[in-house]
Image (tube, rainbow, N blue to C red; front, top):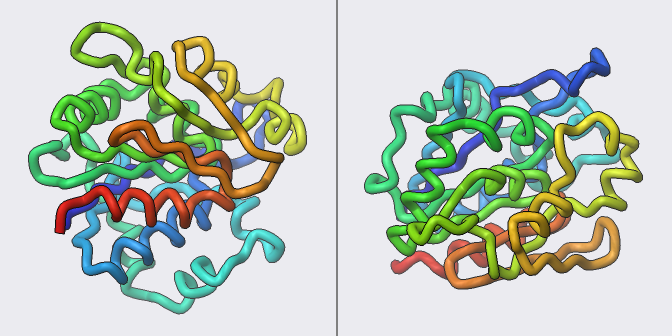
Length: 226
């Protein structure tokens, strides 16, 4: 089993002067689920090297068993510091792709031509495509072979408008994940704010928020032929 994890390289939170990036729990929990199941995991980002960590996900109240494990795991820290360049990745080398969230992907991965074409290739090859929290934003410009938006007519979820309101960033983000998914024709659904929620439609797996990251990863693993 070979899984590609794609992380953001974007670290500026709009014009606020604050930093963003990927959300640690949304990387760590899936990563260890994949590794513990014996998968070979490749990490990539648009710029390669160390992807920026959202400082909010580094705060004490955001820590989980998976993030604590990460901080004791120098080998994985080293891997994360040396992600591959996304442009060098090919769908044919992997069995599935997973996108962790954090606000960063809304700025770079949602607009990145390589990310868009890579997702389209995985989907066209009927391989699992998964994203959690803000990462479903990466489907903003993706299309199916019939030319329709990839999420059109598909059951999906992602970070809710009310969750974005709760963190005070509705007027900062370039777009709202919930609204975008609906605008692209997705059949969007959600649970209560911050509750774990995963939606599966064929080989497309989406999760609502950080609490959903572990379940998204487990669902994805169940789709990969052993």
